[in-house]
Image 1: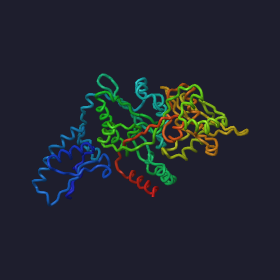
Image 2 (image 1 turned 90 degrees about the vertical axis):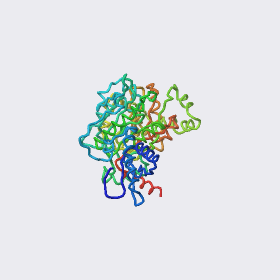
Image 3 (image 1 turned 180 degrees about the vertical axis):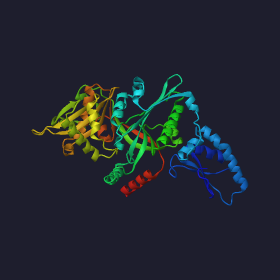
Image 4 (image 1 turned 30 degrees about the vertical axis):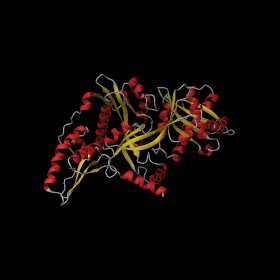
Length: 480
């Protein structure tokens, strides 16, 4: 029992939904009908069984129920890879003198856990995860160096790396997590973020949480490599979840997030049964058809409707700009570029992260794998800088436009955003890159330039439901 008391209502904690389901089924087969307490009635990791006694229950019936629970409870814990220490951690019950037990999955698998990418084999990491976004080995080295700022909590992250292999050294799973501060509405509808940002003008850290999240706030893509064909794949996933949850409790984080997964029924069942709640994420966009040699061939690769859009609203406006590719910015250019980035950040809350400080862009400017696509408007003698793409050249042939900056005074008249997307595609072709990771949001515009749209989901655990309930209330108010 989680909290012994003198009332007729008792709560048997199980922590994991799968444990709850199985225990309810076993007890039902013995003639006992009990209520499962699951999300949203309780947080996803605080599931259990609610038992209510009344005058209609005889002592013999109560005794029989207790005996049935005494028999089935240990059995169910074993079947669902659960334990009393896990349950106590989930409910915040301090445990004393309880030595850690080695699980069956640990004995069959080899786990490497590190807190710095320098300790991970570079060729292996790049083979498993290196062809995406800014989390090849060099990209993670950049991120570790850039987001270490204890004086600024919202831009200070701890990194945690996991690689799981079988006894023969075959990789089964590889991923990384970051621990830092998130806005609770990061993945919420933009209407909610707009309301919360008004409150953050007075309290910048309003509705923020300490989050242990797969990947990082700077990256997107498949952050978790899983060798699904291996017979021990499910055990590897279970082992990762055990270690991630242990770290989650050790850090006393408010939320545990597994993100950027494509829909997969097997993965969904595993995560759900382990106490994770699935939520939809913004769709991801990638471009892979970069084998064309001329603009005419690129145009022909688009759908008829998208081709019409390209020939009318993008290609004719290219001549309005001087387009410059630079590996290094002057101080003046960097200052202008940062202001353009702030323009976009303040106008777009689709992915509501904290605004990056200028030091992040200075680190980009110093790093050999970053480059900048600058658009200068041909306007008399001034030629103002009106748009910029901050692009990372991934080691494994992926081109990643990670951030964007724009002057909104010219955005509509010159189709500035579309032009930046087009110039990014052209640059990736010039570099003979095999893929462009276009990231989240603006899927309609990216699709018109040949991007493939990929639905994504995340799985979360929270210590309480307050933030989620508040955001739900705000969303209902916005709709009413």
